[in-house]
Amino acid sequence: MHVVPKKPSTSWLVVAIIVVSAAIFGYFIHIIGSSLNSQYDSISQVDASTATIAETKIELADDAALYVPSPSLFVENAPWMYVRQSNPLSSTYTPQELVPLTVPTGYSDEPMQLRKDVLSRLRELFDAATTSGYELMVSSAYRSIEEQQSLYDEFVATRGEALASQYVLLPGASEHHTGYAVDLTDASAQCRVDIDQCNLSPATAEWIATHAPDYGFIVRYPSGKKDITGIAHEPWHLRYVGKVLARQLTDNDLTLDEFILLAAPGRAK
Ligand code: ZN
Image (tube, rainbow, N blue to C red; front, side, top):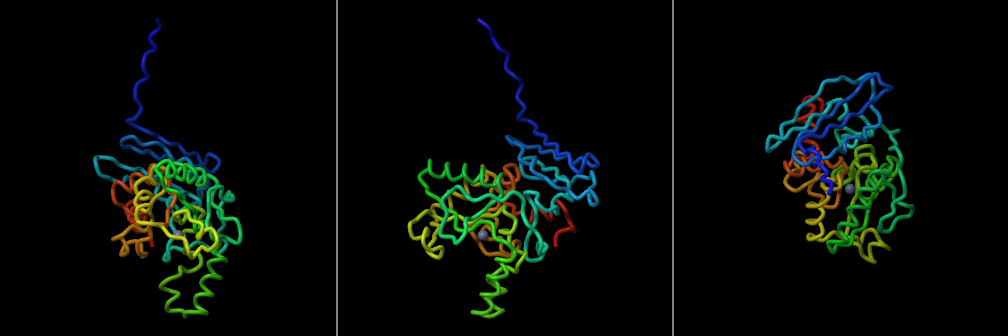
């Protein structure tokens, strides 16, 4: 009988190495923590003119820490790209690799789209939900800056600018422009024919909040964080940030805004 020696455990450290900009600069992201796996390999574009090798260490609970190159936080197309009212995208921004959704969606004139890698994770989340007895649907996915402009103009025309500024994000300021954000709802026949009839029950919202981080998504606007995010609790709005960051932010009760402030103090707007 042959005895195969066990390989030593490697759970103590995961290193993701991302080489960018035609080997001019290398960015290294080290993630130290328990049972982490790397989802940081999806940085696809880094502007060499702003790149440095400097890293920021972010202390988290339980002696865990994240090391991130702070300039990458502000680079378009990184999974943690930062978009909010005070930090809007340029009017010409278009995400990479958008693909039509292959999960159930509510009513839509045109096929809804997300980034290809995000859709893979979303499919896994939907499968896990089904296994747990929850049927999900997407009520909103990628939205172009032009679409947001139409939404905004329509709102202003019917309900006035004051209300619009409260309820509709300015074109460029919505995370839906990135292809990394998705709104979820309980699956229903009504939602399939009328997007206004879509509804996310508290029980499903709770399941999503618990399990979405395992697939790289965070509840981007949690309750009790409006002063920080600028947006009231939206249990349906998920943002893809990658598995490691999603788990760390969720376990440490941090919003993406707080993470940006920790990782790149002085640079967040
Ligand atoms: Zn949303």
